[in-house]
Image (tube, rainbow, N blue to C red; front, side, top):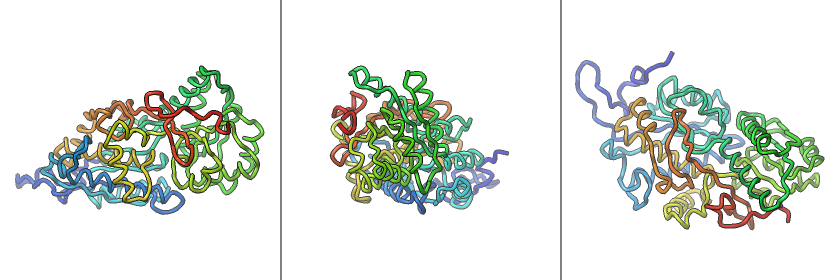
Length: 417
């Protein structure tokens, strides 16, 4: 049974409806609370810490006035709610989908949040999104990439960034472009963890390979957070594909690269499905062993040459975190801005009104820090204009190599050339 949020939450900071039989309209809130559900402990805790820095940067933009061409930047607070400030409450899902469900429900019923944002792991996003739907509270999927998330038939689910079918298409477009330059790319090795992220990623890549005429010589599914990848890497070494395509979170990615080194396997090229291969922790640990690795992404610091807001926001984020924005933190920053912009236009903290405002979102790409055409959601809550880029790790930093419209350098191919 779907529960109407106005039957669950009465009063508090989220009250904007009529109060009972008195007929007296409640004052508009001076504060709007948004719940963020992330892993703040365990193997991926650093992702949660970085997300908190990204949200704090977004809150700075939302709650203060900046001369930036970004949603909500020029006003202090939400003009649609008489300058109300936004506050984010973070809950720890511990990498557990059921804990994510419980924390989402707690944030809605006890913290009285107007909306939810999350959650890095797609497996956790499934339970959060279903809980948000049950309570009719919008959930903005900031950094989850599983294509199946927007295919659940949910009304309160929104994702501004690309999903893995879109990311994988960019990879295969890149392969096709290289082949036109007479580069040899015929065989691919898929390597993916066994949660919804890795499985959906591998399925998308298998489908595209079949359509584009590339041969998958091995498709290895391994147990997430595995203590050993020796057997799997031996298999990768034996097939020696033209391109290794890993879909792994940070700790698994580090273990993969270390095991490759131990077994003397140097792939001709690696094109990764982001996740761990976008994380500073991985490159701090093994970056010298994978010079030339390519990762898909939603974000490129190189865009700062065209959009001044990119450099300014990166500076603000770096002052908090000590590191540059990456694919995840840029999406988290932009996701909170998109969500707050919807609440501002709704002029309400009512879930249905926020949902309607988000569904009507149309933000030009130039008013984001991303290389997207725009933010405009389809009926399933997916933004189909979130154009991906490909980045290559060269000389201790990422450079944009694809598409040509965003590239600042030619790809180093093969990576060990």
